[in-house]
Image (cartoon, rainbow, N blue to C red; front, side):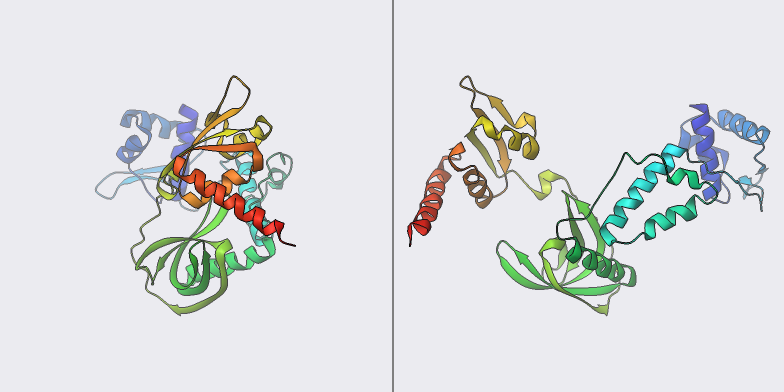
Length: 302
């Protein structure tokens, strides 16, 4: 713990020009005396720290002193590189890997070796997604409004927004923006946007960051219960986890999970064909039947 704390203290001093012992003691939850001993140990280790007393006093690293070796371990640097490569997978460039090379100058061996963690944030429609991310990212940085056509389950609409953040969540990319039409912050899925264009500049407002808990974004308005054929066990595990069902004495699976809307329930249950039966909500059983009959009628036509 002492070594970790000393590395932490050194990291703080590298980022801040000057810091007081009480501030360090509060940050690392130790006594001032412990901080003083850590500072003495860092000086003995060859780090030239300067302590000034008085109203504007504090602890700092001697000016013009440079630390040649990174404070990050090999595994730390490789973890950072994995994250940066994941961003390159979206843009189709290697700009972030090049950034890593700058950060690890003199330690290029850290850029190779552990390649066991591969993160690809691109999608099936990567060619269409990458230009959207580039355009939106630039609009966020330059403070420009963005207009686009938005395609949602309840129809399509024209939107003009003030973009603030790009978010990767629930295996998809989203834009957090202030919508002029709704007069509020909204989350927009990039895959549903078409005809994007940048517009006039806007003055950035106080940003309300999104609360992205699944309970808030996808509230469980309907509690679904269904009997599922065991040959679809893999689907339940992949989509909802092994806790979403129990095994009945006859081997069938009793599924229980919360759904947001009725359309999702019906489309999901019929996707199993004859391999599932909806038990609850009971009022949707008739809608499932009507859905199935509609399909049968269509395919009975010559």
